[in-house]
Length: 57
Image 1 (cartoon, rainbow, N blue to C red):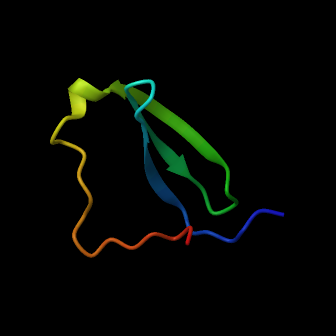
Image 2 (tube, rainbow, N blue to C red):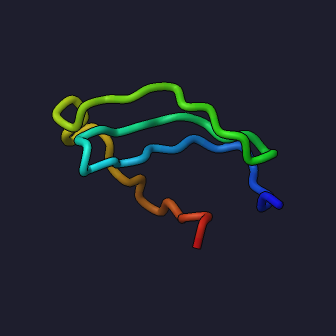
């Protein structure tokens, strides 16, 4: 059983492999990867949004 979520976007920092993966998740919990970037391509460009709250706690 998947938890109830609204649709969202995600950025996953895969620091061991030096990659950032990004994509979107729909309201049914299905995710779609949209792309990957090497860590050096995103340095300083992917940052937390002030006031942003996690939904997986």
